[in-house]
Amino acid sequence: MSGRHLALVAAVSLAAGAMANPVWAAAEAVSAHVSTARPTVGQQLQIDGQVTGASSSTSTVTVTRDDSVGDNQPVGMPVMTNPDGTFSVTDTPPARGSVTYHLSADTGAATTDVATTVAGKPTDLSIHVQPSPANAEDTVHVTAHLGSDTTNREVTLFLRPYKGSKTQFDQGSVDANGDRAADHAVHRRTTFIASFAGDSAYAPVTATTTLRVRATLDEELKGYFRSSGGSRIYHRSDNPVLAVHMLPERKGACLYFRAQHKHHGSWVRSAVSRCVHTDSTGRAIGVLQGHHLAGVAYRLRAEWHGNNAVARRAGTWMRLEFR
Image (cartoon, rainbow, N blue to C red; front, side, top):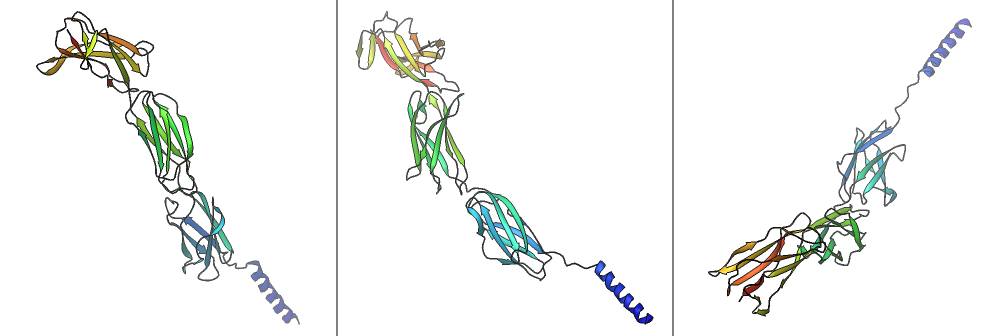
């Protein structure tokens, strides 16, 4: 009896040792990452991954996608892993922004989530202004063109005058041709901006154009006694006055007055004034003094040499003659 008892005890001890150090199989797991560097709407994106600890040499991986369009959208057909557990999945994301892919192996026994950011498709947006260049105080025609087939068809128009603030002046949907147009008066160099906020597929974008604005010089000859053939006629002893109104109106703008006369069939310099500053209403006068040649064609004009805000501009030649 004692020998059988000892054998039984030994058997129980061996069994107890086996239970104290069990050997567990590795749990199944899925790891993955987006291998496409800059995923974009409408372009193929690739996810590479691996299933480890599977009970068989291959596993089935199922993928769904969450984005701004909706959640748990199926991504293609389930894929089989290679014998080493690796796999690749491709997708063409339909929406920009944050996207999360849910990957599960063998009917959900192992899962993982992969997040990425998908860029919107480039948006074709342009802006044009006519006339260009424009004259100060002109009303210009601004047209933004949205060339992409977006679901959002709204465009906003802004302007920013030189050293001024950005201001919205129009907003609304483009027409059937993709155009949104509005008119606005300009007084100095102005940047026009068209803005598109984007939609689920197309990226936000702005388009800009800077309009050069020239001064306007309204001129009037004074002191003549009659007109003849497009020329103002003066007495030889008179000193003609050229009055100028500059737009945009600004005090202290520096104008120059230029006089020429005909000599052997060509226009030659008679005189050029020093800087004459405009008053608070943008007005100034130039006086042609000195010895005047009778029977000789003269012409006068004012000139603005320009600055960063308002481009240079010369007035129209005003014809005159002394009798």
